[in-house]
Image (cartoon, rainbow, N blue to C red; front, side, top):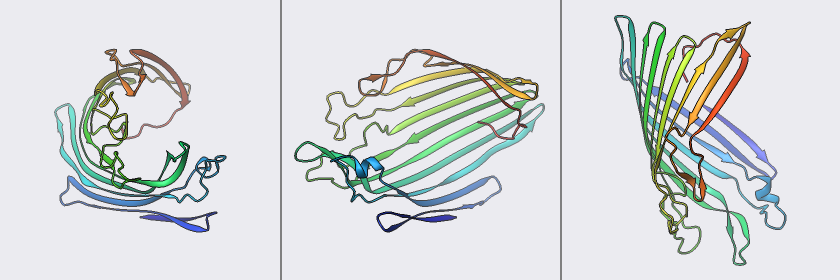
Length: 275
């Protein structure tokens, strides 16, 4: 549990806090609940932009709640291998009050105001499989993510965006990650599928909804140790299948492209965690 207060020049106190609890009903499972409240202070541009800034803005209040179950489904040694299977199921809820948004006034000039009230909620499910075979190791992680986010209070009379899914926020996403490693070598393959999104707040654009898209990425890494230094040589190929897609309307993403990376850092002992 933690909490803090801060004082701003608007002569008001703003507080932030979070708390959580975990419970183990059986040895291999954990039920968790956590909640919190954050304060987002207006930026200097919001407050003091010449002519259009609003020095009377209030901070945004962000309330959050999250809960779920972590479950170790399987953990065993089988001859020369060790297997570990974990599942995660979670639900989250976020609410933003006094959200700051720049919107045009009657003269068509945009100014910021505390006009937005948003809610976002969804479920997350993921499954991890990890195995070790001598000097070989393998990790497979798959997840399904749902997000329902919308404006829940009209910003002005007859607000057409009320209750609509937020712009560029997909309701469904699927993510997969696999890593095969041998001594200092590692091969990583990842995939994500992003569902339909909307480019306009009220879903009225003739281009809406934007098509869903999927992208595959892969990389090959070698991390030798030389003279008490740990080196990293990496070749990464993004958008392996050369898919044509856009995350933001009229801004197409690159086709297949390759990155090369060399990194030198001080040697650090290995940790019993994975990325």
